[in-house]
Length: 115
Image 1 (cartoon, one colour):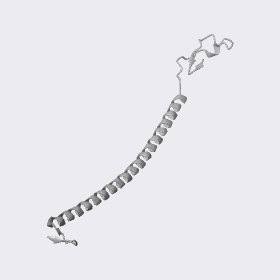
Image 2 (tube, one colour):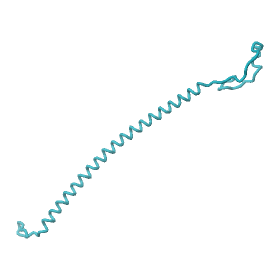
Image 3 (cartoon, rainbow, N blue to C red):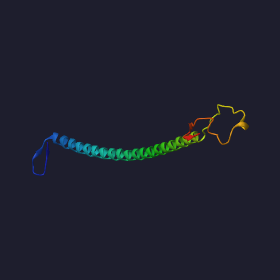
Image 4 (cartoon, rainbow, N blue to C red):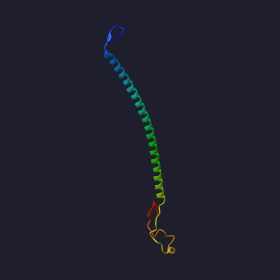
């Protein structure tokens, strides 16, 4: 047994208990450091992920705007390129009377225009 300053004897296993408590304290400190560093790393990765997600979303929005614009321009080109084919062949055009030019056909509507 070991004597302390007051003259009392310390048991031998007291040194083991003291050493184990020091180890437990060190382990707790290490755990807290590891947890803090893990949280810091997690936060930094979350920030990076959010930045990348925002960039991706802005890219998707610009792509969708471009596709909408290209679709509308294609629709406009298709509408502006309307064509029609004459179904009738006019014969004896010289014999047609200019004063009665509407007497030979009924009024029809083509492409929102009356003919």
